[in-house]
Length: 416
Image (cartoon, rainbow, N blue to C red):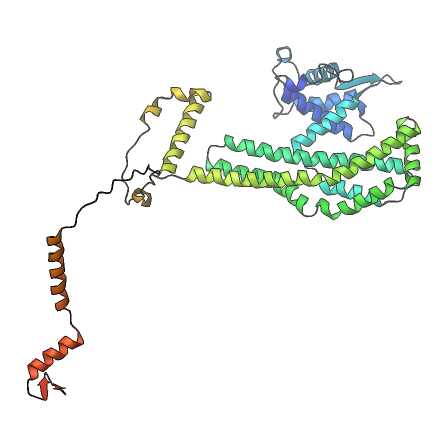
């Protein structure tokens, strides 16, 4: 890579004056981007940079050699430094006018950095629909079309992997937030806005791969079985890649197989994205709930202890091993009263199985006197038990010779 890019290319963006360098690069790129080419007369660029340095909101230099110099000198110095670091090249045309151009690789890097700074999200529907349209098209240049399909498929897969990684980044960032407000701000104002609304939601709805994938795979597989298509595509790719027809045909098979495999295996990436999205939202809610929990039960006390330990480690800038040097850890036990007894307090633990030891059975002679006494008591008890015969005998004794008797308004008749 460094045979193409200068060794000092990234020095401006890593120097103390990186903000000044970046703002000047962006201004120069904006000016050149509006031209027919990335070449502009030097004096025009010097005037623009001079105007930038004269603004009150321009970033300050920390270069000692520039202290006290005027804005035009700073503008010329900036062009010379960017040329020295390999961002620009200055050439003189036939009219002896100097023109400034961005290096080809510098243009690509600046565009990428601008997309990162602007938070630009990938439009998955653009890639999917382009692939879908190219696959269905009837063209006289199948080799070129196949390479375009391959390129868009690679961009689509790369975008999905970046989305997968960015969700993991947000999950890792959750541990940096110390308050409920920070957690909710990260969830609703950052994650929901930049991930869910811009990419994830569309990926499940309008940009859903499943709407186009079956036909894309079917048409590509049909092309791989078409001899006429393979010969024409191989002949075209052989001329583009400058390889033999046999090698070009192998490339065509390789491209088709790679594209089909990418679409068939796309579900694994989508499944992991769904899992991480669910994991992030659950983690954010659980962490906020944990921060809000405050009570005298065991969970609340453990939460307070962990928060205190974390604050102390952060304040003293300790590593995780420094927890043993925190003084208040020796005074963590605290007794408190409760209003009711936990139902588990009445729980009797299950005892383990014990060894059985049988007792000896002794042969004892029965006690006859005790036996007779028990029989006598049983007979007395049986005599007191009422029965129809005893009731009839009692009534006969009370009536005597009488045939009827009135007792409490009830007439009792007796018949022998």
